[in-house]
Image (cartoon, rainbow, N blue to C red; front, side, top):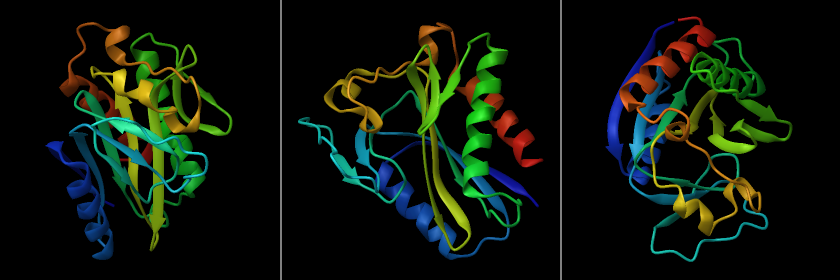
Length: 199
């Protein structure tokens, strides 16, 4: 089965979200990964319980992915997975695990030791979160995906409890690899995702 990669550049979150939902409705015959960065925005997923909303001029949107509140902004690379689970012989849990492991392999190749936490999806370095994951399943297809902090303004995370965890610190690749280039990150992470999906 073909896997199409779409590079969208800097996008508005809501436009991208609506485009994902429209794409799934068409029952596409191929799987896709969309690569993008978003203009600054806070989003809260379906797990709204005890969510602390930010007191900030940055826009906030309630969305239909899993998880709680997070922040997106330029310098954070997002990989959206628009794939059919049955065609790939995957459960949603296997997909989440495979995405996380792909990021861990990428980090290891960069000599960065990442880890995952039970009941707290995403990827961490020294207990600071470097990648956040939230998916939605509809009509056998997934959408939404994983965001990887590369070289961004992390300050807005201080206005929220990221992913619902009070005091959770965020990390980014620039802290460990000062000369990191977004294009190289996209290429190398996608390589791991393709390996996982068998492409």
